[in-house]
Length: 132
Image (tube, rainbow, N blue to C red; front, side, top):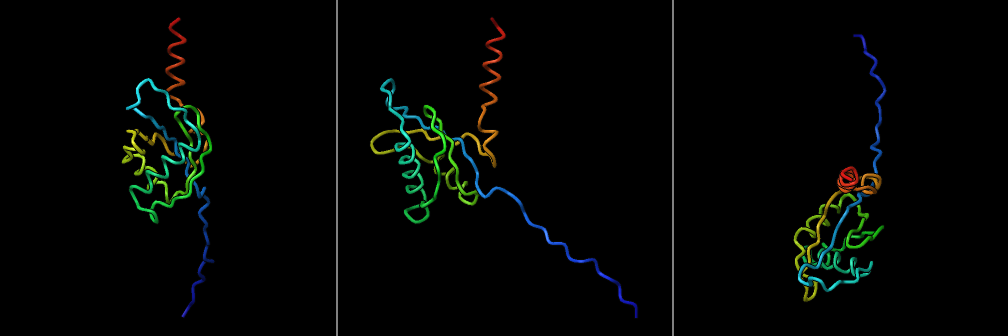
């Protein structure tokens, strides 16, 4: 009986970023013209409150890093296994304290490069500049 040689088993490893970067925006529509001074601490508190409200204290204990805050838009780094929780918490967040809020998850990416430039805003700006 002839034995056939089996090729050596090839081991593969998934190489991927363990984190996901989310672009979020926070608005207080009930305040109207009364400007809210957006701070990093306020943004963290609102996101933490939204996670805790939706998932409870244990389920909402999601670690995230606030990387950038410009106006009412932020870039948040979160473990990719927890990204769905942050996205859902943002979708269901409607109140913070006594104020109505609108927390919107706009985009998600495995790297920061796609979030660095808003291509829609860039294209709109380019079109507006071309009309002069």
